[in-house]
Length: 493
Image (cartoon, one colour):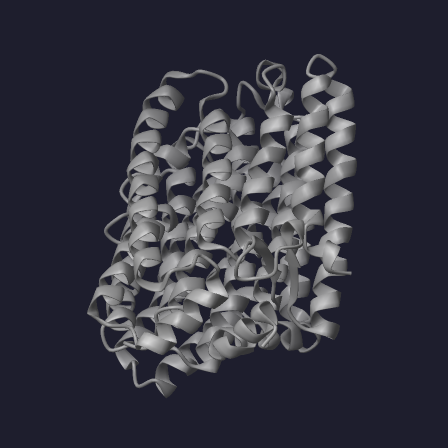
């Protein structure tokens, strides 16, 4: 059953290779991609259940035992993220069928789409710090192509900035891994954790922790390293933006979470206090951006920044309630952000603009779109019983337990301001005087609504079904709180 660990990586990889052979047969590419995505979801569900019943699963590539070989590791944290990624990929894929356009489909859109999922699922599943870098690069190279496909002026301009930022962060990543290897003599994550415990995290390792925080912070868009994201994420079409917003920044968040709970937890007075300060500043800056803009895309993009801050604040607190809340909220945010970006794409397809001042009255002719957006907005803000509520409550509870009262208050206040920012879209875009728009006849609204409706329903079920889901989240949080569980499972001690 350990082979389940590799299936969510192997299936999209083989799919991408096959799709290249059929690059002129677009319909066949769509069907193969959809079938592959469904199979990946089933494989991810089986993986989650296997981890839940049998504990952390490991797969040693080429039969070299850890720490000498390359290991894939699925604890409940990574397995849940792989499942969430697979579901989001499927919804973005079927949305793409009617929105991405032939000019992109003809230039290997579907193979590159699958390569991106390989990178994301690989980053969540690897047990080797250098292979985390490798999967990062697979993910980033795919994102470069998806960002520039279409060749519009804004895409070309923003892709240069996106490329430069990620080249710098990748170079820093290699440097940080080299320094870390020089200190501990291993690249296996579990073995690194054991070695760091043996030497007690001297000051040089805390410096390496900060360097990795910069690397992953650039990719995860924490303050002050978020500067590239509002422009770069604004450029691509809706399904690509949904993938980027839901998945790419979360790989950075996952990497910070994994390293700061598995490696660098011996000097929390320095490393985690720094992380907490940056997380709080990230929330504040994100909220300011979200309420300041009148552009649909920019509002939701800045809400990504807010969510990154909320999740990392919970990780910085370092107690079981905060961990549980952060994991719960991370999965919620991946689902609901994908849904909101896809809904925003429909609004833009109808109106031909993302400026709220140039739209109104959409709910009169598109009530399904309007009320789906309304429910998604409530979920994003954490209105009970929807999915955003439980995660934030647990994070705030963890903050109070850790005597981090200011941070907990910022998280609570951010919920109100996030609700204000997202309801600004609903009030100005969906209420008011009904307008006619030049391109609305061409927008396949009924088809495009399928994906966000799936995600919003999933978000509602995720919130309402907390009692059934919480054992899985608690199991994931337990591994973060007790690194020895991960170490023993990988090194077979």
